[in-house]
Image 1 (tube, rainbow, N blue to C red):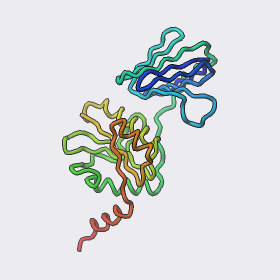
Image 2: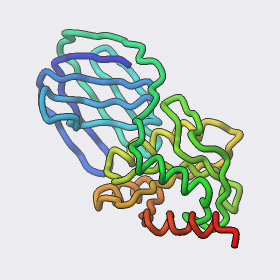
Image 3: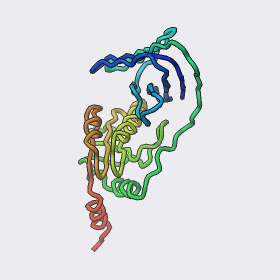
Image 4: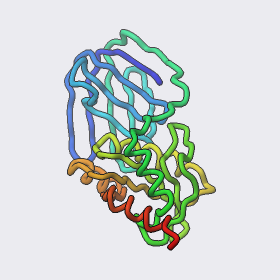
Length: 219
C-alpha cells in the first residue's frame, strides 16, 4: 500500500462531475489498484475514489487515474508532506461470526438453492485479497463468486467486487459472476450491487436449517 499526505485538489469526470478544492489530504493506493482520497475526518468513507481495475499515471505534479468505463480522477498535487510504501502482506479477511459460518456450511451443501444449475467448486477459495466464501460453476460453465454475510451492506459489495476482479484475472475460470448472499441486504447495497452487475440474494436461515434436516433424514 502507498500512503501519500499531500496538499492537493481533485477532479472527477464520469457519470457526474465532482471537485475537491485545494486542501491537505491522504491519498491511498492499495495493492489491488484502488485509489482513495481521504480527509482527516468522516470515519472510513473516502471523499473520492476509483476502484480497480484502473490505470494510474503520474505526470510531474498531476496523477491521472482512469478506468475502462471512461471515468477519470485527476489529482493535482501542490506539496507532498509524506510518501510511504508499506507491504501489508496477504489479508486473511474478516472472521465470520457463528451465523455466517453456519450459512456458509449450509449453502455449500445446497448451492442450487441460490440458483438452479449451480455446482460447488470449493469453499474459501483463495485470492490475493482474501478467500471468497464459495466459488461455484453455473449451468453455462461460468464461475460464480459468492460472498456470504449475516447482514450485507455496502462493505460487502466492495469486498465481493474485489474478489471478482481478482478472480477474473485467472483465465482458467473463464467468465466470473458475483453473488452477495445474506439474511438481509440493505437498500444501498442492493443498488450498488446492481450497478456493478452483481447479483444479491436474501435467504431464510430457519428454512435452510429445515432443508438440512430433511436432507439428513434417511427414513
